[in-house]
Image 1: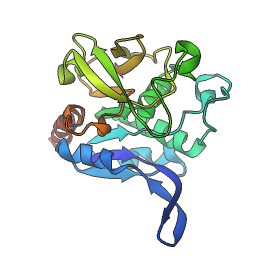
Image 2: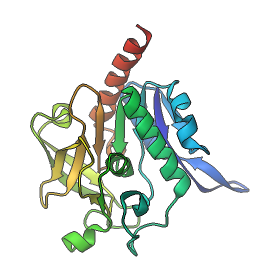
Image 3: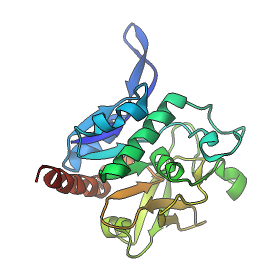
Amino acid sequence: MIGVSTYLQQARTGVWDVTASFLPASYIEGVNRGGGTAVLLPPQPDGAAVADRVLDGIDGLVISGGRDVDPAAYGQPRHPSTDEPVGYRDEWDFALVRAALRRGLPLLGICRGAQVLNVALGGTLHQHLPDVLGHTRHQRGNAVFSTSSVQTVPGTRLAGLIGAHSDAQCYHHQAIDRLGDGLVVSARDTTEGVVEGIELPGDQFVLAVQWHPEERLDDVRLFAGLVEAAKSYATERVS
């Protein structure tokens, strides 16, 4: 059972125009193709108080993509290009990540999820990559993903899952700057060295990528790796 964080936003269907829990179905399909069952985890009030109870019912966790993390969480003023903060989602995602780390729950972060993991462990972000790189190749806009080539770091969990190189579907104008405590870089963009993968060394499955693996469902190795770790976690929990 793999929990996947969602976001709340306005959604229209038929005559209805309401705030809804929202997540692209490609995340669910990625979990399913990887061998798991997806359970959606919409933001909850008092997230820090309920996250542990929610995680009692799952064996692995995906922190999905979405809006920018509030830069106040890493001690910076908001850049003009950074999204308006969505406090309830930040609170929920941070609560889920911290509870997962405490209990050793397998964790996969995707895009925003990588940034949440990094910030939760005390790291910082580049708020607007075009200021650093001078171009918008990593986020072209209009929901068009760009393809980047990434190189993994030998010996990391990520390298063991996807090999030395991979194409990555990217849509991010922010990226990891200073690493959070204990994290290591496990992949970089081959052109400019932008951090594209991070993880915690050791036995616990804590891995996050800046790209969107759910956009390439012909390759579900990351989801399958999470599900395999979740199976081991579930077995150990009941033994």
